[in-house]
Amino acid sequence: MDSAVAFLTSKIPFLASLPFWVVAFLVMLVVALVILGFALTYEGIATYIERKVAADIQVRIGPNRVGPNGWFQFIADGVKLLMKEDLIPAKADKFLFVLAPYLVFVGSFAAFVVVPFGISLIAADLNIGVYYVMAVTSLVVIGILLAGWGSNNKWALLGGMRAAAQIVSYEVPVGMALLPAVILAGSLSLQEIIRSQGGYLGIFGWNIFHNPFTFFSFFLYFTAALAETNRTPFDIPEAESELVAGYHVEYSGIRFAFFFMAEYGDMFVVCALAAALYLGGWQVPFVDVSGLSPLLANLLSLGVFLAKVIALILVMMWVRWTLPRLRVDQLMRMSWKYLVPLTFVNVLGVSVWVLAFDGKGIPALVMSLLGR
Image 1 (cartoon, rainbow, N blue to C red):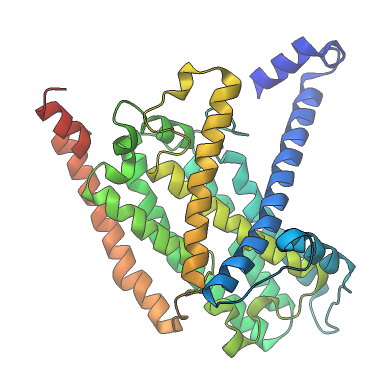
Image 2 (image 1 turned 90 degrees about the vertical axis):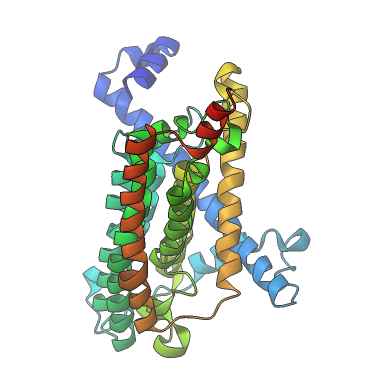
């Protein structure tokens, strides 16, 4: 922040006459608007892509009326939701009912602040980046509970309680599955974790290939993250066949849209974490982007990072439209009986590996044996 303020005041003389806090506030406001614009654009396009993916899997055409090949369908959907009547049930707790969707969206949007889009494309490189993401995304649980309670609807309340139980249960394996990457990098900063995966090894320097424990940690994290985002086959909080639409059954219009924007935002965040911690983040295989010009380095690293994240999001969509929904007991059993013990074993295994091999991974050990 200090460097950004110093740069702007040196380039724009008018800003130099303003107090530091005013310039800092303006910088934060601009960054927030840029991130918001990116998040809203991504969420709109993601809804279109998912509808096309679903159509392909189900041998349908999908949206094809608005724009060429239906590309502007998400704009039509947004206009429809904005124009739709915004209803509040007569017996609902109006304050909680209105607050819930915005709280859910803020919990999802705030996580974008620490997402490392490129070598220097990050709003705030916090030294507790991983911890910060885990903390702010917990707001989603509170918002969903408020939505279920404030709606004064039995289906909404059941969906809210299910969502709270599910997200709290899967927070544990998600957090434990992220720890191996933190242990290897020795830092909670997402940028530091990504930098630790660079070097001459290329893709084999990524944490997913470091040792067997990190390899399994990636898949454990991705499975638990699917459940934490309430995606099929873990979408029991909004199971249509059981709860009509779950915690957002009474919502309409723009408030209904906020829940879905938050869901797609959560998808991006969990996939960005997976890419940053296990797939090298913005690291370009066998290319040292730090040696390029700042503009080229940022563009190249941004493209690589988004490609990895989009690939993981497509896997999420493929899983949603392929697998059947689990029962509540199966969902809880998977978390506490399988994922939690396995992630604990993985953390212990990575810790022992780091002590035994001085932090070197299998690719580095092989290269040292070959004398390189």
